[in-house]
Image (cartoon, rainbow, N blue to C red; front, top):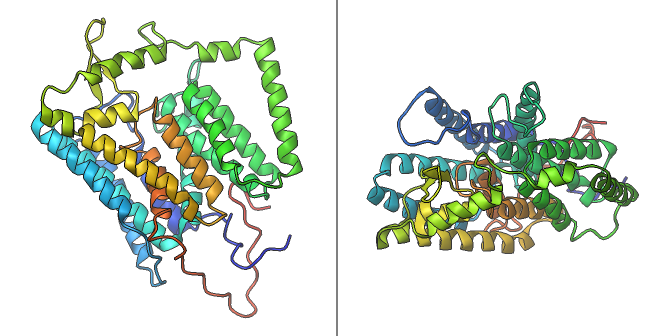
Length: 417
C-alpha cells in the first residue's frame, strides 16, 4: 500500500524512550493495595509509588531534552488544572485533610507535567499509542495473574491487585486502541484479536458502565469513517448476530445487568445513596465552594446499616473534593478538550475522540477522572494535544540518510508481521 510522506509513524509502536515513562505513569497511578484509601502518612507502598511517578517525570524530562527540537505545547490545561488543585487544597486546609489532600494534588501535578513533556518530545499520535500499550501491559498482567483466583464472579487483578473497575478502564483503553487502525482503514486480523481479547477481559470484570461506554466510544471514533473495510462490516455483523443469540439463549446478559452489591442493593441504587449524601455534605460556605481535598474518597451516609460509602462518580467526587469551583473548572476543562479535538491531525482523531468519550462517559458513574489515575492520563493527553498552542506544531522527523532501509510496516497493536 502506498503511503504519503509523514504517515509512516502514524500507527507505529511507540519508541521505548516514550513507552517506558508512560508505562511508569500507568503503573504508578493504579492501586497497589486492594480496598485501601489514602489518608496521609508514608509507608513503603506510598513511597514506592512516589518514586515510580518521579522516575517517569525524570525520563520524560530527559526525553524532552534529548537534543531534538521540541514541539510547542499549550499551557491552558495547566491553568485549568491549577484552579482545580488550588481549590481542593484550600478546601482540605479547612477540612483538616491538608497533608493528604496536598499529596494527591502533587501526584496529579506531576502526572500533568510528565504528560506535557512527553507530548513535547514525541507528539500526540505517538503518545496516544504509548498510552494504549502501557494500559494493555499493566491491565494484561493484572488480568492474567487474577485469572488464577477467578471463581466465576467479577475479575480482580492479581499483580497489581486492581479492582474490576480499574481493569475495565485499562481494557477499555485497549479496545479503543485496537479499533484505531481499523477506523483509519488499516486494520489487520491481529488488531481484531486484541480487540476481542480486551473486550473479553472487560466482560469478565462485570463493569456494565465501561462496557456500554466503550462500545459507544468506538462509534464516536468511527464518526469520520468514510470507507469502512470489508472486515469491519463483516465483523460488526457477526458481533451483532452473536450478541442477539447470547441474549436470546442464555441468562449471561441479564445476570450481568442485574448485579447487586454487598448491601443487597443494585449498584446504581447504592450510588444514589452516596450522591444524596454528598448534596448535603458541606456544612459551610467555604466547604461548599472548595470541597475537602482530593484525598476524600468516602462520604458519610445515614439511614443505612453502613456508615460511609465510596463516591462512585467523578463529578460527585469533584464537588466533595474541590467544591463548586472545582466542578466548574473540571466541566470547562472537559468541554475545552472536546472542542480541541478539531485541532488534531487526522491520524490521531479516532483514538483521541474515542478515548476522551470513554473516560468522560464512564466518569458519570465511576470515580477517578480527576485523580492521579489512567483516566486522568488520557484526559491530559487529549487536552494538551488539542490546545490551540499545540495545533499544527509538531516538528517533522529528519529525512532518513541516503541508503538507509525503509521503516517496517507499522502497526498500533500486535507484533510486526
